Length: 370
Image 1 (cartoon, rainbow, N blue to C red):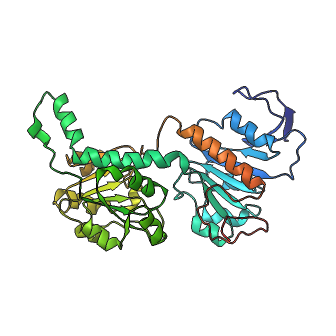
Image 2 (cartoon, rainbow, N blue to C red):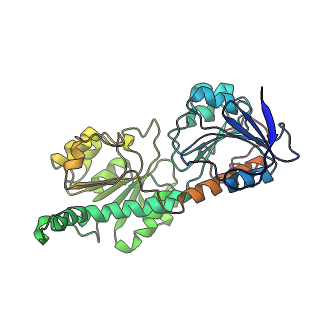
Image 3 (cartoon, helix red, strand yellow):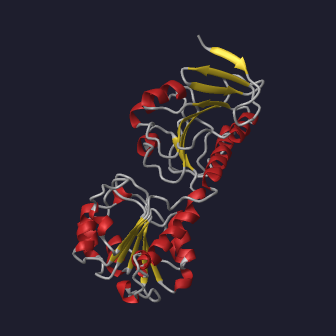
């Protein structure tokens, strides 16, 4: 039997209204609210808990809020069957295409963070479900990290650091050979992060080219970036930096063919997703000299196997999928998500829409596209 009780505060010290506890779920019904109100269900989250201040922000708006750390998609259906918004915070892969028909009231899937490869975007779009995300918290850090990886590879910083720690004070251990001025940087994908890279790297006096079939050429030209085809970019660029989202179309978009198009002195940077690159082909490219080096924040398998050859190459710098991280990241993620939910409760457009051309399944919803 479901128990209903009023409690004065959560363990975070935030005072709330009525809680209904059942089957591992927590449903928050605002004081004076009812179960026919706007419903939101968070079905998976990377953080330790949902912060009390976020619960309070949502509750103040009269929103019914269900919380459950779901182990699989069946649990999602249990907690989110009547939710207007199904919310995934971070990387949990519990919202699948198979359960969308059972989420009959779902108008929006909110994925906290930037990437949406753990959300069935194509199927949601076909079902008239808006997909929203919160990319602002990671955009600047990822752009900076892409540039940092480039500099670390070009200046051979990691090799020099290891040599000095091993007692070798010798410039010739890893002598820098590449000068960036007048070189060409190719941006594969020209969304929010790539545009920030273009802005931040402008002082390096590099020529910028980009490929993105989803972005109008005028947008690139406005930022001083030349639009080109993917093949032309790979052939021209001294540095290739990957910034496209992971989709069926971009899965392993960089394979042997693409790597062989690159210059022998080219450097490859990936702060997007590891699955967009054929890692075996990349290993061959680095070991056989098709390209000069790589800076990688993401891999096909994370963490990598200890015997992964990439871990042995001096011309590769690897970081542990940390590009988007910073000391304000989770605060920004929670707050952006709460603000997005509050706007959507008013049937306003989401702050960031992943599928802006979707035809919403329910009247009164807007993606911001006329």
